Length: 341
Ligand SMILES: NC(=O)c1ccc[n+]([C@@H]2O[C@H](COP(=O)([O-])OP(=O)(O)OC[C@H]3O[C@@H](n4cnc5c(N)ncnc54)[C@H](O)[C@@H]3O)[C@@H](O)[C@H]2O)c1
Image (cartoon, rainbow, N blue to C red; front, top):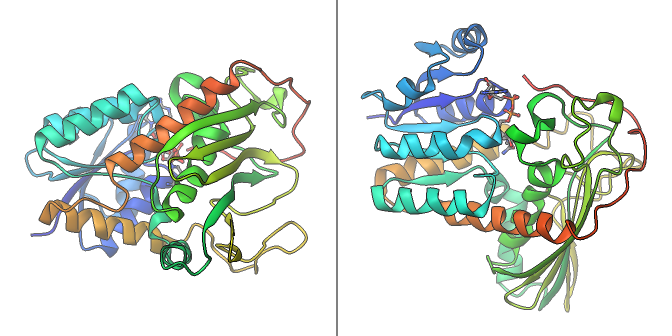
């Protein structure tokens, strides 16, 4: 029988996960979100039978096997724990939790309940990323000494809950930087972080566009990770960056045998082709297919709970490192603002 899923959230990522579920042969039974009329609209568009704002009932329903958590970051921990307590498998988006304590609790609960937990680190399912990981693992670049990665948006940053610290737990680093951190780790064969040093600022924030003017909503960061295998990674995160040095999750690898990067050098001066879709459905579909297979077999997903935990641990360590030197604001953002649904 096809895996029966309750989707929590009807926004950007819920749409991708719902289409990915269809591609993977799963069935979305229900969708819930904080504005029931919008959940209904989402359900109509996707042909989903049940919709509303009661996520607790949706999670507990006896005809649901798995829960996809696509809500603001602070809801990941309570919603995933509720799903696990009801015996459901969980695909929770990144960041899996606001901090290490929450993430460990989620990992422990999933293990104790014997359910599958997958975390939305979907770059691990992207062909170009896997190809470079395989090339490194096969020794094709010699010994890797350093990586440099990007989790940035140029001239763009989100609004709504993303900029509400109680819902997001931070800004561009926990939202975008975490993708580049996990991508570097995946390329390197999943070492653990021995040391994390960071400078985190509100350099490109637009105070006029920020409802809270909250300095905890970071807009740019540089993070240095010393990995357990001796490799060092630099990761840059950013919203509203004036110039794009690399697309989301782009990572350059410096090795004794040469230099490689995941994608061609897309920059503001040399942008990707007009029809290029960086966040294409394929990798979300591959992730969902892995999740569905793991729910059936008990195998551990490529983007496992432990993968999500290590990414959260590094982000937390970066914020903690940066707290010793709060960077000064640099003035209004260059341009642009996105919307949250
Ligand atoms: N892996 C990826 O590529 C990727 C991409 C985008 C977002 N995400 C993650 O997915 C999650 C959702 O992000 P999104 O872009 O879909 O957000 P969104 O704003 O588009 O949707 C958020 C959803 O959460 C629900 N929600 C519940 N309580 C809410 C509240 N108090 N305020 C606002 N919304 C509330 C809303 O109903 C809405 O459906 C986040 O954790 C984000 O980090 C992952």
